[in-house]
Amino acid sequence: QRVPATGERALRELHLGGGSPTYLSPDSMQRLLEPMLESCRVSADVELSIEVDPRRTTFDQLKVLAGLGFRRISLGVQDFDPEVQRLINRNQDYECTRRVTEQARELGYHSINYDLIYGLPRQDERTMRDTIEKTIALRPDRLAFYSYARVPWIKAAQRLFTEADLPSGEEKRNLYEVGRQMFASADYQEIGMDHFALRTDGLWKAVEAGTLHRNFMGYTTQNTNLMLGLGVSSISDSWDCFHQNEKVTKKYQKMIGEGQLPTFRGHMLSPEDLRVRRLILDVATTWRVKLPADLSADVRAYLSEMEADNLIVFEGDQMRVTDVGRPFLRNICMGLDLRFRRNKPDTKVFSQSI
Image 1 (cartoon, one colour):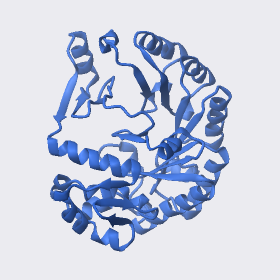
Image 2 (cartoon, rainbow, N blue to C red):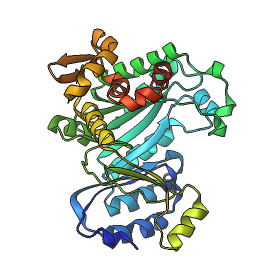
Image 3 (tube, one colour):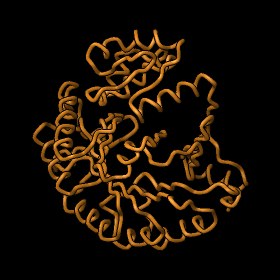
């Protein structure tokens, strides 16, 4: 109902996330999306994408979405090994993923992404290689290779295993390197921040054109300073402000029904926040940054070990990330954020970033 209030702003990107959209019937998807797309001005280069759970995705759902203009799809995979799947309570066989991938291609989806995770319980080099070989055989256009984060106090299913089932820090790092090398051998280009893409995919083309953008959800080809989050707990970003919607469904519905913005919490970025944000965005998307004079010496001192290991190179007032340094983009970006460094012990930050 409030979409017309966007006025002349054109819709450039729409993403349905979380895997939950595939719990909707094809008819429900149509009724949810069609009025929204008809009520606003849609950019000629709009990108419509969806994150799906392959176990609950049907051909009819994909067909409805394709008819509405969706051309990019992301499949949650995590790992193909049955024992690993059992421990993380996610049974999803290879044929299920293959079926959805082939159906999406048949319907004209031109960018298919897989989410994989390294560091899962009972994962070792053998299972990792098997999962990646199967992934490469299906030839997704993009890959997200995320580090597993253990939070059993939030996710009850993670209590099915113990710390002893998890790879050590060194073993986990090796799993990433195994994946990275296998992706490179299959012509996937490393972008950084866990992402890889074929040269033919729009994400890598944006890298080559110098137009790659990144927001808190990840890399995107659409460079915009306004992102609106719709739905319970979603986050909006207007470049100088973040705000999150109410996380409790009943409270969210009540606020919407009363004509209120369902804001749960927010943060206005200070001038220093905005400067750091720009620096981090440059490093994450172009692998280089021009350092302000008042930060240069401090950043160089903080990242001196990375410089010694040839992960970064300082060239005058510029800092450049090398090819071998790309897996460490997060750690490099931390060096640009003085507030973050003050609030986090170095050892804990590093352990959380691998």
